Image (cartoon, rainbow, N blue to C red; front, side):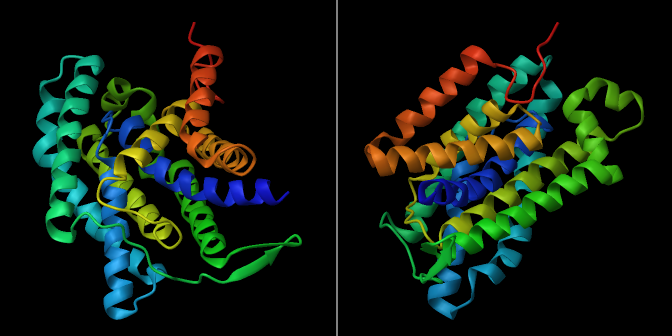
Length: 288
């Protein structure tokens, strides 16, 4: 039971991180390989705000979210929109965006190394035990999980109930058809990309409360988010959440019972299994 709850707490934060990439890839069709660097940057802001001004990370997210939204909006409009405009098909757009954001990730790492150095950073926030079902867990992990549930729930409701959310889902399903019914695909794709970056950065601020990060760790979170998005199904919020929880439980089980160094390998074994037996994702339907 302890392994299960610890895994679910970790998976909740993974869901938040992967939700950002899912919005960017599922709607804007941009496979953002710099997603992890946005996460680490969010963690850096939370770290600096807490150590310099004792500002709670739970309040820092209200600074991180609009800041990341604005930066990602500019990245999309200035760097990625021209790629979208000139792409003749989805395959070309994905190839171009992978190459462009791969370079962007190096720029992100370089800037963070220049400003903050290469040292690991961490801080002690709510590092006290809380009891759940007879076992003790870190309060910072429990709070991060609760915040992730609230944010993922709000996103799910917004995507399924609001006019803008339904339009974004229409773009994710059939961008060409969405344009024919009057949906502003260009504007909403930029919105989805910026919103995805903001969600990822908030996830970074939350995960920094209990994980040690450094400027170069972003690639690990990009890979995990990619695994979750593919497993859950591109554009499928429900699948992303379930896949993130499964990954959190799997990693915790392997780290506790076998070896912490094998967690990433175990994640890829599960990823390969999904690709072989359910390539459409956990809740996706086979194409005919």
